[in-house]
Image 1: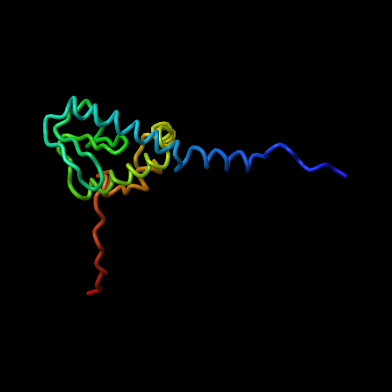
Image 2: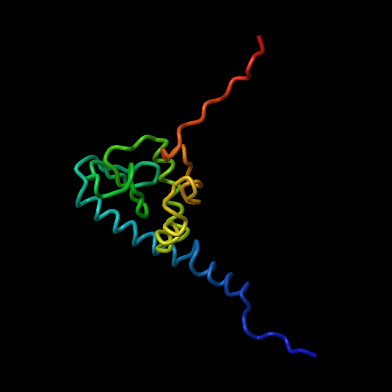
Length: 146
């Protein structure tokens, strides 16, 4: 007769990892730290309006070298030059939620997901159209036979 296992197996270790690091007080602390970094960075370099929209601190007038593409979400801060449509802010609000869930693991997980936004699971979740990565799809009209 074999004795029961006393050491935790991989499934238990994975569950403990998720409980402690993902969507937890630890991840929220990482989110708050990232938000503080984004806020200081935005405060230092923003030359435009700073406002609170869709739950984000939006820093406009950022220099182009301070972010990639149209803007960057760092914690609860969105840093951009002028890309502040409601659609884009909705996309960035999803990234804010990703920061909340993953905390300081988020930048590493994002990079591991790949730099191609069309294949990056975080960009797909946030919405490729809203993020400006693909053109909005048009409703196709049925073809008529003449």
